[in-house]
Length: 222
Image 1 (cartoon, rainbow, N blue to C red):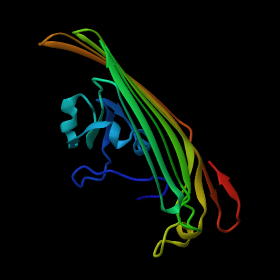
Image 2 (cartoon, rainbow, N blue to C red; image 1 turned 120 degrees about the horizontal axis):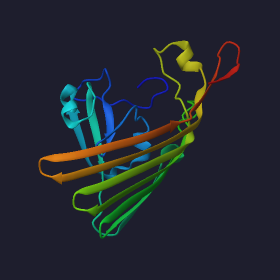
Image 3 (cartoon, helix red, strand yellow; image 1 turned 90 degrees about the vertical axis):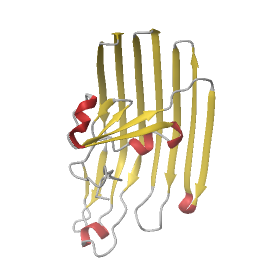
Image 4 (tube, helix red, strand yellow; image 1 turned 120 degrees about the vertical axis):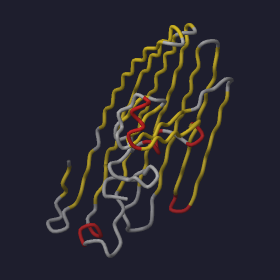
């Protein structure tokens, strides 16, 4: 764990440089919000490709790729998950998906909250929304699109010894974590020997980081 980052993933122990992420084969840089966006119940498969072998998939991740494949629904299905635990920790997630003819969709709505241990600056509350749409107007053409949105805030846990004084005493938080990610993939395969794929993605992140200087008690916002 590092300051300002909730978690890292490694591919077979290879931690640096960090592997890139892809959602349903569409590259997504610095996808640290993934644990909030996608519930485990919405994931069909996690494909891990180590090092430069990822280039063979058409993705340019020299350090490897973690490709998250979300669920595709063949019939109407709805699930709801609700949990409550220590430190007033609350988890809610609802998902629904269905398929009708050449069109299928999936959607998920979630909220995570915790007060954390007393005097450790660990409270957080984040809501998220996920949508996926797939359309196959004819056999040779498949159009897929995904949308992810989250909004909330998170305090950064105070470190324990032997960490330095600053990390043990400085109060800091993301008073706004707001991210929007969307992508579109169009795949056209006229025959077994030829195919064309176009990928477009858009990301908008608006985090507001605040910290209290331990010497002057000044609130610094970036």
